[in-house]
Image 1 (cartoon, rainbow, N blue to C red):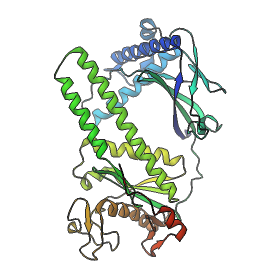
Image 2: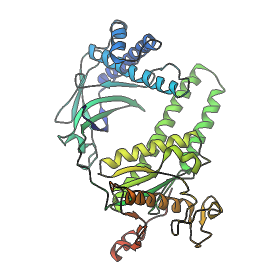
Image 3: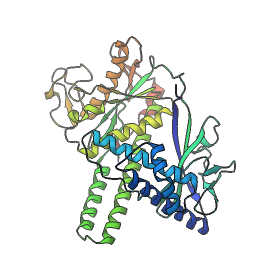
Image 4: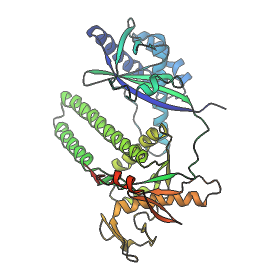
Length: 413
């Protein structure tokens, strides 16, 4: 049986000289050419790595200055891109042939060496260059978790250029262990996803989506103005704007994910529970294709970051989490008279609608564990001022802990 691995990426800027810069830029240009050569040859014929390598290797070597190993890596990247397109085609979409325009190049153990002094040697179209990693001055920077831990093995990495700076996305992996904590007696952080509030937790942490939507509208307006020009320069600018938007959205979602994991650690949670993303359109009717994509990407980012903190990330059924009273469980559409307001028609409980839904998500995870013969769920749901269980009800935190959390902000701008 193939061994499973946990994968992580540590991003760090490279300090490069002008001579090194020129060589790296040329390498990136030839890498993109090599990838496109392989794509043009394999698009209508194959997707297997070995088949594409056999088909395109000689052409890449003849028409670019890439070395032998980089030519092989280019065919592997093309195989991944074509496989993704075929998966989309099976789902009913009509993907276009991949175009390799991003300023990146892939490295592996044969084309890159990482030294103990935190410098790297990189293969280029000519000679190798050696550059220092511009690591944070803070010794607690997350990159050191992987650079200084021998259990993490350096694997394929990616060099990219952004705003004139070179960044190395160092890939690490280590075998997945089977000694994961059981969450039977743990604590759940429930998370509700939405359009106006991108994420709300059962501990009353509100992470707004307004700024994200505003910035996306600004990008959309700018793209519209540029498209009207229709010139070659406009097309180049349009591509640059699209790349900036992509980086902005990715960074925004990473920061939200980091906030969620920090909130889980603050309340000693062992599980972060989301509603099932396959059914989320029913609970968030105003969500468009972008929001649905963002929800899935956010979940992936949280799962990625939480796993490194020994926190499990799960999805639970989403039915009626927005209509159910987290206090008495009465479920009715009339419980939600307005989008942002919840008021139970049975017990009179009033709350922010998203906060109420987040508590329901957490409690559903708790109940799932209680009903499971494997006891995989958690025993309590984390709230701002205490914990909640279906059987024992609400239990407040000790006075000193309540004081610690009393100044928590309800809304993050």
